[in-house]
Image 1 (spheres, rainbow, N blue to C red):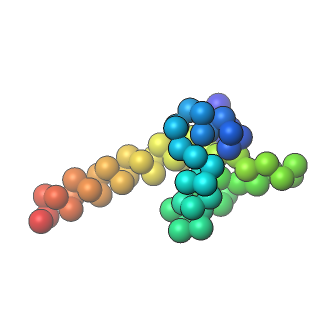
Image 2 (cartoon, one colour):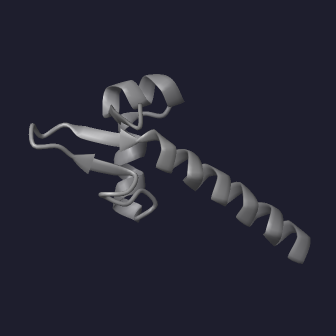
Length: 68
């Protein structure tokens, strides 16, 4: 399953809903890519895209360490 409701994402990831909303406000989670509000008003999270975001962050951190 690619898209899950926010509550389920929080159960799976251990993140809070406040953390998800904070990432959206900071532009770390992009609406339409990492999350979206469905027609019923519920926030859904794209687990596959969030996993890519985590992996890219890991690669960026390793590159920074190597460069430094």
